[in-house]
Length: 280
Image (cartoon, rainbow, N blue to C red; front, side):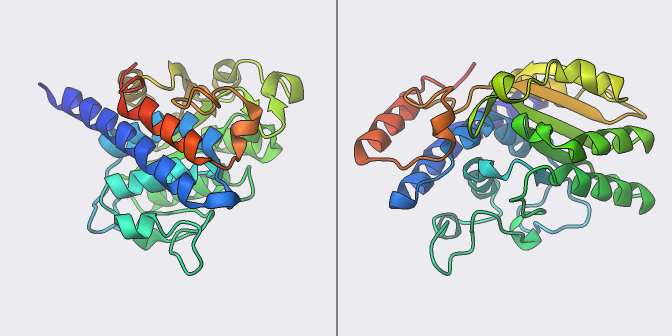
């Protein structure tokens, strides 16, 4: 088995473990509920990053030479926090303090010592922060890369398109943008609210190297992250399903934020444990 195959297998293991932990987190919130839909659509993207792509040190999350990861679509915290635990940057106790009074993980924290480089919350802001980090890396002659995860609905925000223009203008080939293209927003389908057309064609016109990919195939995601893009930023348009891996809420706008009953939780855990979503 070569190094790439090992990283892909590790990423798949991350993804399954992250799904189980994410459900445990969501169940622990009780009647407050949690954002399952967008978290589970981006699970394989984030697992691939932490399992095989990002350069980081588990024992030194704020290491200056680390790759930066900005979750602009911050409603994916179930995936990003469970990834931090799998990566060894936080422990189980910290993970399960999510949404508890006095806990270390609120919905939108900022804590580089825990591997969280951006707080999020207001959509459409993460790309600008990521561009700043990428420009700082260039100026300081540091070779880290900056990865920014956007939601497709979030791309309704005009600030993102100003950011895309800026990233190409400054030739930020240390910037990689991932769009979680699940075609669903808080209040309905993207095509009905604000049709975006082809992200790939738009971003190529804006000066990016852009690729379309199955956002639930870790093999495909991994290869996409290796795409050559010297002199240009890279955009990975990941086709996903909102709530992926949870059949009862897949592809439903109402999965954005829901409360899990005991029956929901047990059925969802069984689907994941049985391995139906282990590999695409």
